[in-house]
Image (tube, rainbow, N blue to C red; front, side):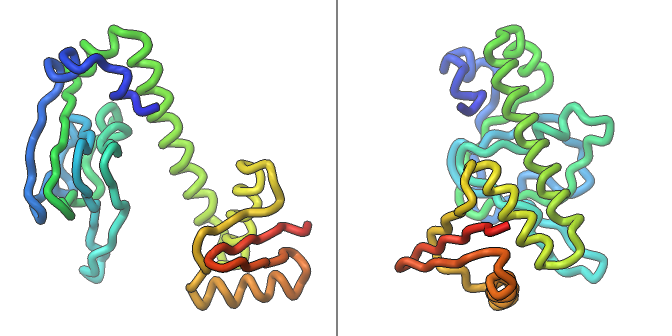
Length: 195
């Protein structure tokens, strides 16, 4: 459950601010101080940064019902890590620290917020752990292992056929080494961990 859904509508409207953006508008820039949490009521936002070679890279893509700034707002280093650009017309609901102090007097809202933020932090830790693996083969096996634990099954289903040639090549090698089995049924692909 999204923490915002646990807030009564009038109370929510009194303790937040709605801002409307057009496609292409910038919500914030990299390096700016994060002084509020944004909740995407409608639209899609990409967070992008430039590499040292000035190539633009997407850090993340946010959609309706996603939040941003929730981890940064209370951080001792609360500077945005990228630029937020509206990919579509957007309606964003903003919460300042003062708004949140009022909302968090309700323990249900506070608990739901903390649960969502800690789940997001855990997801980032898992992503970081995955990236610590040095090659694509180890990343694939780690991902499959983690997914099998989450699903409590040795078989992981993918709804579309995997099309990245590097990944397909590694999956074929893992199948040849009898570490995994791959079964395809139409647009669905099932990968079973054998060890």
